Image (cartoon, rainbow over the protein chains, first blue to last red):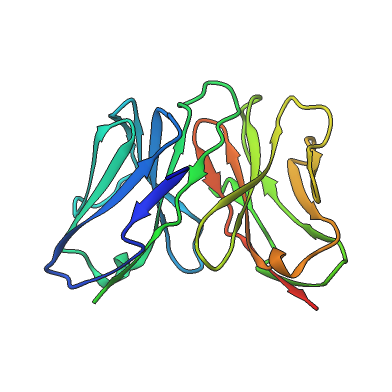
Length: 116
Length: 111
């Protein structure tokens, strides 16, 4: 496996379900990110982890719970979601949280989530 | 306030022609980076090109070039010799202390 992988690619869940999205990066990066992409809206940064510590949480509802057990893996645990949470969830990684301007992020293919 | 503005929701371009995608940004930082990403229908975000705020020359990567006008805070993407495989959503992004994305422009290349 190379780059950033995400599983599952598609997920349909009911509002009472609990599910988890998984992201794995094979690039030796130290920072990982979760983004939400809804139709006709810009990508929204949800969470940022650097060296397995959460450094940013952009006012995301508590029904989304991230977990970063090591620098290669990032999870997004989902519970009691709402239909408006249906979106494409993208994971990304970068070498670090650069102080300089260059901070290329490598993205995974995304998980397309539908909440019924 | 929106940091990245892409004013063209959608564009059509004839195969083999060039297309320019507009992007303006807003930041008070002196050090920042500008990125363009391509997102095909499969969903994956593909990095295309990068321009640093201190770079004096416009960035180029193959058929992609970035027309960087710092005073105007503009970072337009030019795709030359369009191909059918270029049909996708294109996002402009800026990194100052985090990566912020524009709303995107859908490009459809016609044969």
